[in-house]
Length: 308
Image (tube, rainbow, N blue to C red; front, side, top):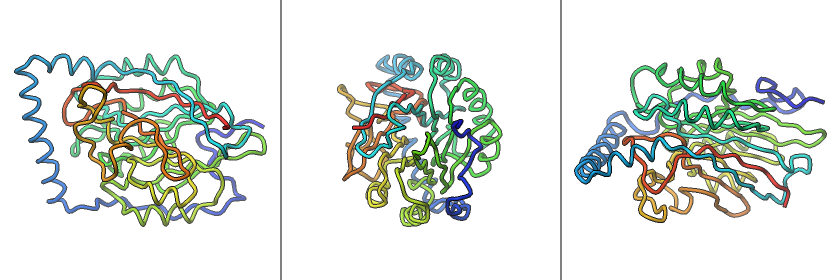
């Protein structure tokens, strides 16, 4: 039996997905704008200082130097047929930003053959303006992706609901408080996509959407690592996220100056454990606020699942 493609959806035998979620920003427009203004002012000052010291050009070169990161994740309850299953994980492409990563990321993707591709949000750099400036390059980038089970995506805190249709037209199945069943023979994995809890839906609403879905082995796509307790309580086995950029501007040793999450810093980058759940926070592909990276490379992650 051939594996499902990106449009296969949930089989009729499973319970119906919860109602479509309406995206709404948790903060008021004034509060959201004030926070953005403070962040940008702080980083503008830092950027000016880096230009004076001559480090700005090096930071731009670092930001353009995306790497391929291959690694395994061992999971005790992984269905046997999914041992060796590969997941291509990208996040925070910010495709309309000042660093053009389309060609370099395309070259990386041309050398990858994976079972599944997941995109965990923040397709655009700006918080206002035309979304086409981001969705058009995203559409070109995903043409380089080769997978057996398709491409699935969720929304980030930079993204607008009006972007869902063009992203799906590009071949990305968007999961907004929704799920799909992946199959290998008689074994199944539930891939769950929840809307962003950093700036959009409250954690309790995301937890309710998760509780309404069928059980089984669950891989959760969430933009930020800010749904830890709720996901662990819902028996999520693997939590894939981004949002933090790994810090983007880090001290030697990869210590982030700022993480922009409401959880402990240990969840801001790389592999982690929370209760019985394993998670991975990618450092992301693109950049935000400043077109710079220090001691934190952008990455395309290629994860191989292993049955522990």
